[in-house]
Length: 240
Image 1 (cartoon, one colour):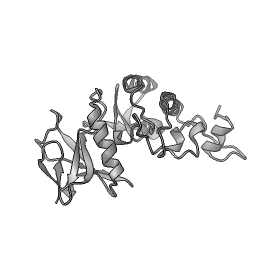
Image 2 (tube, helix red, strand yellow; image 1 turned 45 degrees about the horizontal axis):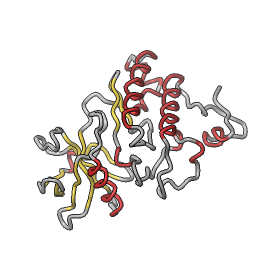
Image 3 (cartoon, helix red, strand yellow; image 1 turned 30 degrees about the horizontal axis):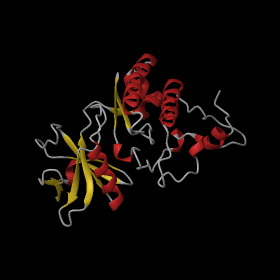
């Protein structure tokens, strides 16, 4: 087991490889030991970066210093996880997603919708709390990389994960999902400066809603010469 230190309390935390909840190109997420609480939140998950750089720690600490008032459905950083060996930021602690939540990606699958008996009315009632959640974050926080894998649903509920990439103050959201990215940001180096505006979150929201209602991307389908979604988006050739 690898050991880390909670920056706020100095408590040591051991992460068991058997407690891995998921892994991606940037980090691995672990379920933290039962009974551990931070700021009254329990159960908890820990996100450990594969290649932590100082900029991650600076942004996370500034996020914590802001003491944003966030809805419980936003699984935001609660404390830093420091490497036991050198006390540098290795990741952070956040609330654990409750059982039953699934990524919005599932709402865009006809097969999964039919298997779970999800109706169009269910979809609409799921997007209402997501609208409320985004509204609560603006204007101080902009999600930026709002995509069908970091927003989760449980019918008539929505939750947001991967909040460490969120844009606030001088700190940009350095990543994006092209299928949900406002076309004016194509080709922009998002890591250099805050590039997103609130309307960009609403663009992504509408893409997710369209895709969930009609089971296709608004710039989806096929075209003889405009073969990709970004090409069709720039040319404003919709699936309609």
